Structures are given as structure tokens and as C-alpha cells.
Length: 210
Image 1 (cartoon, rainbow, N blue to C red):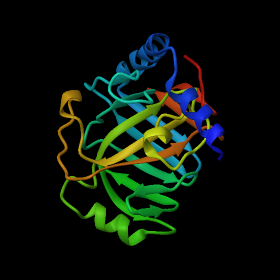
Image 2 (spheres, rainbow, N blue to C red; image 1 turned 180 degrees about the horizontal axis):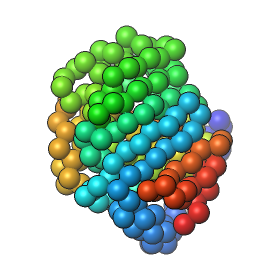
Image 3 (spheres, rainbow, N blue to C red; image 1 turned 60 degrees about the vertical axis):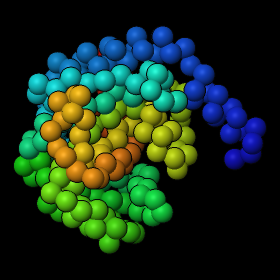
């Protein structure tokens, strides 16, 4: 990527009409706030997360730039299923992991694998008691970001993606899980993915239906 291309990317990601973006994301938040259960379906992925009694937060560029996500601390003991981060690497400085896959039962990671960096994955999962619990569900909403940049601050905001963080939750959002770990991994739902709220498809192939 040339400097000019990076400038165009950066301005497109950050110089948004954030008032309009906040209004758009508030509608997404309102639908997810009403959901007891969110199901994430994609390549190698079928994961169910409970948001019962949890309210989300909109990042509309006030806390950091770029903004562009709605995020939650899920119910700690209710995550079930499998997620495969097959599209993008997972970064834990200075390490880059490929094809991370995790199976959740009763809210905890019970199986895990990675095509590269598996030792780092297991070391992190075993860091403390809370490291195997899902601490965050984030929903990317920034339509100005369409390409992967290998920088989580940007990548987790891509419209049509979700990011899931193992470890610490957000107490301000009702999160109770404590851990020294908070590791975001990005899942691309644009190629054939779905987001469902209480069984209703609200996003398909990365396109919002609400």
C-alpha cells in the first residue's frame, strides 16, 4: 500500500459523519439489546452467545478513532458452539496466529487449535481462570473500512465482521469476568455469514437487514 493509498484509507475510516453513524449504530444496538440470544454463523463457525440482561455500547468515534462498532459483554456461562477465525490472523504482539479455532461449552473454551502459534494460544488460554471465558462480542459497523489492515484497531471495525475477545469483560456493560487477558479476534461474515437475534436473521453476507 502506497502512502497515498494509506491516506485515503485512513481518511475514509476516520472522517465520517459521526452523528449520522451514531444514529445508524443506535438502531443496530437497539435490536441487539432486545435479543436474549445471538447466533453467529460463518465458515467453520456456529456460535451462540447470550446477551440476556446485557446492554451494549456504541463506539461512534468519541473514545477512539476510527469508531464504528457496537459491543457487549456476554453472559459468562452461556456461550456455546464453535468459532473458526479462518479469514484473518489473530495478533498477540509479537505473535501472529493463523486459523484459530475454539469450541465453547458452558461459556468456556474446552477445545482450541491453531495452524500456527498454537503454543501461544494455549499459553494465553491458561493464563488465569477467566482467560477461557468470552469477555466481548463486538459488531463491526464502519462502512469506510473494507480491507484488512493487520491492525486490530481498524480491523475490528470492518462492517460485516464480528470480533470476539477471550478474557476480561466490561464491568460498565454488566461484564463479570475478570482476567489479565483481553484478546480480540476478528471473524469476517461477508462471505456467506449470518447474524441472528433470537432466530431472526439481522445480517447476511455482511449486509444489514434491519
